[in-house]
Length: 414
Image (tube, rainbow, N blue to C red; front, side, top):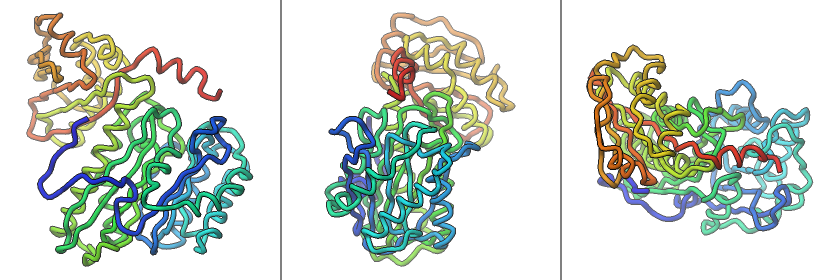
Protein backbone atom coordinates (compact mmCIF):
# COMPACT_ATOMS: atom_id res chain seq x y z
CA UNK A 1 0.00 0.00 0.00
CA UNK A 2 1.46 3.32 -1.09
CA UNK A 3 1.78 6.01 1.58
CA UNK A 4 0.51 9.49 0.78
CA UNK A 5 3.50 11.84 0.62
CA UNK A 6 3.16 15.37 2.00
CA UNK A 7 5.86 18.05 2.14
CA UNK A 8 7.08 18.58 5.68
CA UNK A 9 6.06 15.11 6.89
CA UNK A 10 8.33 12.08 7.02
CA UNK A 11 7.23 8.54 7.75
CA UNK A 12 9.27 7.05 10.58
CA UNK A 13 9.55 3.76 12.43
CA UNK A 14 8.28 3.20 15.95
CA UNK A 15 4.51 3.04 15.60
CA UNK A 16 2.81 4.00 18.85
CA UNK A 17 6.26 4.57 20.44
CA UNK A 18 7.68 6.84 17.74
CA UNK A 19 6.92 9.84 19.96
CA UNK A 20 9.34 10.68 22.77
CA UNK A 21 8.46 9.43 26.23
CA UNK A 22 6.28 6.47 25.27
CA UNK A 23 6.91 2.78 25.92
CA UNK A 24 4.82 -0.28 25.17
CA UNK A 25 4.73 -4.04 25.47
CA UNK A 26 2.64 -7.12 24.83
CA UNK A 27 2.59 -10.63 26.22
CA UNK A 28 0.60 -13.85 26.29
CA UNK A 29 -1.37 -14.10 29.52
CA UNK A 30 -3.59 -17.05 28.65
CA UNK A 31 -6.81 -15.51 27.34
CA UNK A 32 -5.92 -16.77 23.87
CA UNK A 33 -5.58 -20.52 23.41
CA UNK A 34 -2.52 -19.98 21.19
CA UNK A 35 0.52 -19.67 23.50
CA UNK A 36 2.44 -17.87 20.74
CA UNK A 37 -0.15 -15.07 20.46
CA UNK A 38 0.10 -11.91 22.58
CA UNK A 39 -3.27 -11.18 24.18
CA UNK A 40 -2.40 -8.42 26.66
CA UNK A 41 -0.87 -5.06 25.75
CA UNK A 42 0.12 -1.77 27.34
CA UNK A 43 1.08 1.76 26.29
CA UNK A 44 2.70 4.08 28.85
CA UNK A 45 3.88 7.69 28.96
CA UNK A 46 6.65 8.94 31.23
CA UNK A 47 4.52 11.95 32.13
CA UNK A 48 0.85 12.83 32.27
CA UNK A 49 -0.77 13.29 28.86
CA UNK A 50 -3.62 15.29 27.50
CA UNK A 51 -6.06 12.73 26.10
CA UNK A 52 -9.10 12.51 23.85
CA UNK A 53 -11.25 9.67 22.58
CA UNK A 54 -14.14 8.80 20.28
CA UNK A 55 -16.27 5.71 20.83
CA UNK A 56 -18.61 3.32 19.03
CA UNK A 57 -22.16 4.55 18.37
CA UNK A 58 -23.58 1.09 19.06
CA UNK A 59 -26.16 1.29 21.86
CA UNK A 60 -24.52 -1.79 23.36
CA UNK A 61 -21.17 -0.57 24.65
CA UNK A 62 -18.40 -2.71 26.11
CA UNK A 63 -17.61 -2.25 29.78
CA UNK A 64 -14.09 -0.95 28.98
CA UNK A 65 -15.59 1.97 27.06
CA UNK A 66 -17.80 2.92 29.99
CA UNK A 67 -14.85 2.84 32.38
CA UNK A 68 -12.55 4.76 30.01
CA UNK A 69 -15.17 7.50 29.62
CA UNK A 70 -15.53 7.75 33.40
CA UNK A 71 -11.77 7.96 33.86
CA UNK A 72 -11.35 10.73 31.29
CA UNK A 73 -14.24 12.64 32.86
CA UNK A 74 -12.67 12.23 36.31
CA UNK A 75 -9.25 13.53 35.22
CA UNK A 76 -10.46 16.26 32.89
CA UNK A 77 -8.95 14.53 29.85
CA UNK A 78 -5.66 13.32 31.33
CA UNK A 79 -4.09 9.85 31.15
CA UNK A 80 -0.76 8.06 31.50
CA UNK A 81 -1.41 4.54 30.22
CA UNK A 82 -3.61 2.23 28.17
CA UNK A 83 -4.21 -1.42 29.12
CA UNK A 84 -5.81 -3.62 26.48
CA UNK A 85 -6.64 -7.29 25.97
CA UNK A 86 -7.77 -9.34 23.02
CA UNK A 87 -9.82 -12.58 22.74
CA UNK A 88 -12.57 -11.37 25.13
CA UNK A 89 -14.55 -8.13 24.60
CA UNK A 90 -15.78 -7.92 28.21
CA UNK A 91 -19.18 -6.87 26.87
CA UNK A 92 -22.69 -7.90 27.99
CA UNK A 93 -21.35 -9.29 31.27
CA UNK A 94 -22.88 -8.46 34.71
CA UNK A 95 -19.40 -7.96 36.20
CA UNK A 96 -17.93 -6.25 33.14
CA UNK A 97 -17.37 -2.77 34.59
CA UNK A 98 -15.83 -4.19 37.75
CA UNK A 99 -13.41 -6.28 35.66
CA UNK A 100 -12.50 -3.29 33.47
CA UNK A 101 -11.87 -1.20 36.59
CA UNK A 102 -9.79 -4.07 38.03
CA UNK A 103 -7.61 -3.90 34.92
CA UNK A 104 -7.06 -0.18 35.58
CA UNK A 105 -6.24 -0.86 39.23
CA UNK A 106 -3.79 -3.65 38.43
CA UNK A 107 -2.02 -1.47 35.86
CA UNK A 108 -1.94 1.58 38.13
CA UNK A 109 -0.46 -0.42 41.01
CA UNK A 110 2.43 -1.60 38.82
CA UNK A 111 3.04 1.86 37.35
CA UNK A 112 2.53 3.72 40.65
CA UNK A 113 -0.13 6.00 39.19
CA UNK A 114 -3.85 6.39 39.90
CA UNK A 115 -6.39 4.00 38.28
CA UNK A 116 -8.18 7.00 36.78
CA UNK A 117 -5.05 7.74 34.73
CA UNK A 118 -5.42 4.40 32.94
CA UNK A 119 -7.57 3.90 29.83
CA UNK A 120 -8.84 0.36 29.26
CA UNK A 121 -9.91 -1.45 26.10
CA UNK A 122 -10.89 -4.99 25.19
CA UNK A 123 -11.67 -6.82 21.95
CA UNK A 124 -12.84 -10.29 21.09
CA UNK A 125 -15.90 -12.44 21.77
CA UNK A 126 -18.97 -10.64 23.17
CA UNK A 127 -21.01 -12.12 26.02
CA UNK A 128 -18.35 -14.26 27.63
CA UNK A 129 -17.13 -13.57 31.17
CA UNK A 130 -13.63 -12.11 31.25
CA UNK A 131 -11.21 -14.01 33.46
CA UNK A 132 -9.27 -11.39 35.40
CA UNK A 133 -6.81 -13.89 36.95
CA UNK A 134 -4.59 -14.33 33.85
CA UNK A 135 -4.32 -10.55 33.55
CA UNK A 136 -3.47 -10.16 37.23
CA UNK A 137 -0.87 -12.92 36.99
CA UNK A 138 0.93 -11.34 34.01
CA UNK A 139 0.59 -7.58 34.54
CA UNK A 140 3.95 -7.42 36.35
CA UNK A 141 5.68 -9.18 33.44
CA UNK A 142 3.94 -6.88 30.98
CA UNK A 143 5.01 -3.70 32.76
CA UNK A 144 8.58 -4.82 33.48
CA UNK A 145 9.14 -5.49 29.78
CA UNK A 146 7.95 -2.12 28.53
CA UNK A 147 10.24 -0.24 26.16
CA UNK A 148 9.98 2.02 23.09
CA UNK A 149 11.25 -0.91 21.02
CA UNK A 150 8.32 -3.16 22.01
CA UNK A 151 5.65 -1.24 20.11
CA UNK A 152 5.25 -4.24 17.81
CA UNK A 153 4.50 -6.51 20.77
CA UNK A 154 1.64 -4.22 21.76
CA UNK A 155 0.37 -4.04 18.18
CA UNK A 156 0.31 -7.84 18.05
CA UNK A 157 -1.53 -8.08 21.39
CA UNK A 158 -4.62 -6.28 20.04
CA UNK A 159 -4.98 -8.46 16.94
CA UNK A 160 -7.97 -10.81 16.68
CA UNK A 161 -8.68 -12.09 13.15
CA UNK A 162 -6.15 -9.59 11.79
CA UNK A 163 -3.51 -11.19 9.59
CA UNK A 164 -0.95 -8.38 10.00
CA UNK A 165 -0.22 -5.77 12.67
CA UNK A 166 -1.03 -2.21 11.72
CA UNK A 167 1.35 0.63 12.65
CA UNK A 168 2.35 3.97 11.13
CA UNK A 169 4.10 7.13 12.36
CA UNK A 170 5.20 10.51 11.01
CA UNK A 171 7.57 13.27 12.09
CA UNK A 172 6.91 16.98 11.48
CA UNK A 173 7.74 20.37 12.97
CA UNK A 174 5.83 22.63 15.34
CA UNK A 175 7.19 25.86 16.73
CA UNK A 176 10.65 24.90 15.40
CA UNK A 177 10.60 21.59 17.30
CA UNK A 178 10.61 18.11 15.76
CA UNK A 179 7.42 16.29 16.76
CA UNK A 180 6.30 12.72 16.18
CA UNK A 181 2.87 11.18 15.96
CA UNK A 182 2.21 7.47 15.56
CA UNK A 183 -0.39 4.83 16.12
CA UNK A 184 -1.50 1.23 15.99
CA UNK A 185 -4.82 -0.31 15.10
CA UNK A 186 -6.62 -3.62 14.98
CA UNK A 187 -9.63 -4.84 13.08
CA UNK A 188 -10.64 -7.16 10.27
CA UNK A 189 -14.37 -7.67 10.73
CA UNK A 190 -17.42 -6.18 12.47
CA UNK A 191 -16.43 -2.80 11.04
CA UNK A 192 -18.91 -0.27 9.69
CA UNK A 193 -19.02 3.55 9.63
CA UNK A 194 -20.14 5.89 12.39
CA UNK A 195 -17.47 4.93 14.83
CA UNK A 196 -17.07 1.46 14.56
CA UNK A 197 -13.42 2.03 14.15
CA UNK A 198 -12.12 -1.08 15.89
CA UNK A 199 -9.38 -0.30 18.44
CA UNK A 200 -6.98 2.48 17.55
CA UNK A 201 -4.34 4.04 19.79
CA UNK A 202 -2.41 7.17 18.81
CA UNK A 203 0.39 8.96 20.66
CA UNK A 204 2.28 12.19 20.09
CA UNK A 205 4.99 14.16 21.85
CA UNK A 206 3.43 17.41 20.63
CA UNK A 207 1.83 19.68 23.22
CA UNK A 208 -1.85 20.17 22.37
CA UNK A 209 -4.71 21.25 24.63
CA UNK A 210 -7.44 18.73 25.46
CA UNK A 211 -10.22 20.63 23.62
CA UNK A 212 -8.18 20.86 20.41
CA UNK A 213 -7.11 17.21 20.67
CA UNK A 214 -10.78 16.25 20.88
CA UNK A 215 -11.75 18.55 18.00
CA UNK A 216 -8.99 17.30 15.70
CA UNK A 217 -9.77 13.68 16.52
CA UNK A 218 -13.49 14.05 15.85
CA UNK A 219 -12.92 16.01 12.63
CA UNK A 220 -10.54 13.39 11.23
CA UNK A 221 -12.58 10.39 12.36
CA UNK A 222 -15.36 11.74 10.14
CA UNK A 223 -13.25 11.53 6.96
CA UNK A 224 -11.17 8.43 7.80
CA UNK A 225 -12.39 5.74 10.20
CA UNK A 226 -16.05 6.65 9.73
CA UNK A 227 -15.56 6.13 5.99
CA UNK A 228 -14.45 2.54 6.50
CA UNK A 229 -16.73 -0.46 6.03
CA UNK A 230 -15.82 -4.14 5.99
CA UNK A 231 -19.10 -5.95 6.57
CA UNK A 232 -21.87 -3.60 7.72
CA UNK A 233 -21.64 -4.50 11.42
CA UNK A 234 -20.94 -1.77 13.98
CA UNK A 235 -19.10 -3.30 16.93
CA UNK A 236 -19.61 -2.68 20.64
CA UNK A 237 -16.06 -1.98 21.83
CA UNK A 238 -14.63 0.31 19.19
CA UNK A 239 -12.58 3.26 20.32
CA UNK A 240 -9.88 5.57 19.08
CA UNK A 241 -7.87 7.50 21.63
CA UNK A 242 -4.94 9.89 21.44
CA UNK A 243 -2.38 10.74 24.12
CA UNK A 244 -0.22 13.89 23.87
CA UNK A 245 2.62 14.23 26.40
CA UNK A 246 4.26 17.46 25.17
CA UNK A 247 7.83 16.12 25.35
CA UNK A 248 8.73 17.60 21.95
CA UNK A 249 8.89 20.97 23.67
CA UNK A 250 6.67 23.01 21.36
CA UNK A 251 4.48 25.74 22.76
CA UNK A 252 1.13 24.14 23.60
CA UNK A 253 -1.43 24.49 20.83
CA UNK A 254 -4.44 26.20 22.35
CA UNK A 255 -6.02 27.81 19.28
CA UNK A 256 -6.67 26.93 15.66
CA UNK A 257 -3.58 28.47 14.09
CA UNK A 258 -0.84 27.31 11.71
CA UNK A 259 0.60 24.93 14.29
CA UNK A 260 -2.84 23.39 14.80
CA UNK A 261 -3.16 22.92 11.04
CA UNK A 262 0.24 21.18 10.92
CA UNK A 263 -0.72 18.89 13.80
CA UNK A 264 -4.10 18.22 12.19
CA UNK A 265 -2.37 17.14 8.97
CA UNK A 266 -0.05 14.76 10.85
CA UNK A 267 -2.99 13.18 12.65
CA UNK A 268 -4.85 12.88 9.34
CA UNK A 269 -1.95 11.10 7.66
CA UNK A 270 -1.63 8.54 10.46
CA UNK A 271 -5.37 7.91 10.72
CA UNK A 272 -5.75 7.75 6.93
CA UNK A 273 -3.13 5.04 6.58
CA UNK A 274 -4.40 3.05 9.55
CA UNK A 275 -7.86 3.20 7.95
CA UNK A 276 -6.52 1.85 4.68
CA UNK A 277 -4.58 -0.88 6.50
CA UNK A 278 -7.78 -1.93 8.24
CA UNK A 279 -9.66 -2.00 4.96
CA UNK A 280 -7.01 -4.06 3.20
CA UNK A 281 -6.96 -6.62 6.02
CA UNK A 282 -10.73 -7.15 6.12
CA UNK A 283 -11.73 -10.68 7.04
CA UNK A 284 -11.11 -12.93 4.05
CA UNK A 285 -10.32 -9.92 1.89
CA UNK A 286 -8.28 -10.15 -1.27
CA UNK A 287 -8.69 -6.55 -2.49
CA UNK A 288 -8.55 -3.07 -0.99
CA UNK A 289 -11.36 -0.89 -2.38
CA UNK A 290 -11.16 2.91 -2.42
CA UNK A 291 -14.19 4.84 -3.61
CA UNK A 292 -13.63 8.48 -4.51
CA UNK A 293 -16.66 10.68 -5.13
CA UNK A 294 -15.78 13.96 -6.82
CA UNK A 295 -18.19 16.64 -7.95
CA UNK A 296 -20.26 16.51 -4.75
CA UNK A 297 -22.27 19.58 -3.66
CA UNK A 298 -20.92 19.26 -0.08
CA UNK A 299 -18.75 16.99 2.07
CA UNK A 300 -21.60 15.16 3.78
CA UNK A 301 -23.17 14.24 0.44
CA UNK A 302 -19.83 13.02 -0.94
CA UNK A 303 -19.14 10.92 2.16
CA UNK A 304 -22.63 9.41 2.16
CA UNK A 305 -22.35 8.46 -1.50
CA UNK A 306 -18.88 6.93 -1.18
CA UNK A 307 -19.82 5.03 1.99
CA UNK A 308 -22.95 3.65 0.36
CA UNK A 309 -20.93 2.17 -2.50
CA UNK A 310 -18.22 0.76 -0.23
CA UNK A 311 -20.84 -0.73 2.10
CA UNK A 312 -22.73 -2.56 -0.67
CA UNK A 313 -22.38 -6.35 -0.42
CA UNK A 314 -23.20 -6.58 -4.12
CA UNK A 315 -20.44 -4.12 -5.08
CA UNK A 316 -18.00 -5.97 -2.82
CA UNK A 317 -18.95 -9.29 -4.41
CA UNK A 318 -18.57 -7.88 -7.92
CA UNK A 319 -15.08 -6.62 -7.09
CA UNK A 320 -14.17 -10.06 -5.74
CA UNK A 321 -15.34 -11.61 -8.99
CA UNK A 322 -13.64 -8.94 -11.16
CA UNK A 323 -17.05 -8.07 -12.59
CA UNK A 324 -17.27 -4.46 -13.82
CA UNK A 325 -20.97 -4.19 -12.99
CA UNK A 326 -21.79 -0.48 -12.91
CA UNK A 327 -25.43 -1.26 -12.12
CA UNK A 328 -24.51 -2.30 -8.60
CA UNK A 329 -22.60 0.94 -8.06
CA UNK A 330 -25.48 3.08 -9.35
CA UNK A 331 -27.92 1.09 -7.21
CA UNK A 332 -25.83 1.81 -4.10
CA UNK A 333 -25.73 5.51 -4.98
CA UNK A 334 -29.50 5.46 -5.40
CA UNK A 335 -30.17 4.39 -1.82
CA UNK A 336 -27.44 6.57 -0.30
CA UNK A 337 -29.84 8.95 1.53
CA UNK A 338 -28.72 11.88 -0.59
CA UNK A 339 -30.36 14.16 -3.15
CA UNK A 340 -28.08 13.02 -5.97
CA UNK A 341 -29.16 13.22 -9.59
CA UNK A 342 -27.94 9.81 -10.75
CA UNK A 343 -28.52 10.80 -14.39
CA UNK A 344 -25.39 12.98 -14.13
CA UNK A 345 -23.06 10.34 -12.67
CA UNK A 346 -19.91 9.01 -14.36
CA UNK A 347 -18.09 5.90 -13.08
CA UNK A 348 -14.55 4.72 -13.76
CA UNK A 349 -12.88 1.59 -12.39
CA UNK A 350 -9.10 1.74 -12.09
CA UNK A 351 -6.06 -0.09 -10.75
CA UNK A 352 -2.36 -0.46 -11.50
CA UNK A 353 -3.43 -2.31 -14.65
CA UNK A 354 -5.24 0.70 -16.10
CA UNK A 355 -8.78 2.03 -16.08
CA UNK A 356 -12.12 1.54 -17.76
CA UNK A 357 -15.15 3.87 -17.98
CA UNK A 358 -18.27 1.86 -17.22
CA UNK A 359 -20.89 4.60 -16.86
CA UNK A 360 -21.54 8.09 -18.22
CA UNK A 361 -24.48 10.36 -17.42
CA UNK A 362 -26.05 7.60 -15.38
CA UNK A 363 -26.00 5.09 -18.24
CA UNK A 364 -23.90 1.99 -18.65
CA UNK A 365 -21.26 2.05 -21.39
CA UNK A 366 -20.06 -0.69 -23.68
CA UNK A 367 -16.50 -1.74 -22.77
CA UNK A 368 -14.01 -4.53 -23.29
CA UNK A 369 -14.99 -7.13 -20.66
CA UNK A 370 -11.60 -8.85 -20.78
CA UNK A 371 -9.75 -5.57 -20.27
CA UNK A 372 -12.08 -4.63 -17.41
CA UNK A 373 -11.51 -7.99 -15.73
CA UNK A 374 -7.76 -7.41 -16.02
CA UNK A 375 -8.12 -4.02 -14.31
CA UNK A 376 -10.13 -5.62 -11.49
CA UNK A 377 -7.68 -8.49 -11.03
CA UNK A 378 -5.36 -6.28 -8.96
CA UNK A 379 -5.39 -6.26 -5.15
CA UNK A 380 -6.11 -2.52 -4.93
CA UNK A 381 -9.11 -1.17 -6.84
CA UNK A 382 -10.24 2.44 -7.23
CA UNK A 383 -13.92 3.16 -7.83
CA UNK A 384 -13.90 6.71 -9.19
CA UNK A 385 -17.27 8.43 -9.30
CA UNK A 386 -17.94 11.93 -10.61
CA UNK A 387 -21.29 13.13 -9.31
CA UNK A 388 -21.07 16.27 -11.49
CA UNK A 389 -23.05 18.30 -8.93
CA UNK A 390 -20.40 20.43 -7.23
CA UNK A 391 -16.71 20.81 -6.42
CA UNK A 392 -16.25 18.77 -3.21
CA UNK A 393 -14.65 15.32 -3.05
CA UNK A 394 -14.79 12.52 -0.46
CA UNK A 395 -13.41 9.02 -0.06
CA UNK A 396 -14.42 5.76 1.59
CA UNK A 397 -12.54 2.48 2.01
CA UNK A 398 -13.42 -1.18 2.25
CA UNK A 399 -12.65 -4.57 0.79
CA UNK A 400 -14.16 -7.25 -1.39
CA UNK A 401 -16.53 -9.87 0.02
CA UNK A 402 -15.07 -13.36 -0.33
CA UNK A 403 -15.95 -16.94 0.54
CA UNK A 404 -13.44 -16.79 3.38
CA UNK A 405 -15.39 -14.06 5.20
CA UNK A 406 -18.19 -16.56 5.87
CA UNK A 407 -15.74 -19.29 6.86
CA UNK A 408 -14.00 -17.02 9.37
CA UNK A 409 -17.22 -15.84 11.00
CA UNK A 410 -19.01 -19.18 10.98
CA UNK A 411 -16.70 -20.45 13.73
CA UNK A 412 -15.45 -17.19 15.29
CA UNK A 413 -15.78 -18.39 18.91
CA UNK A 414 -13.78 -21.59 18.41
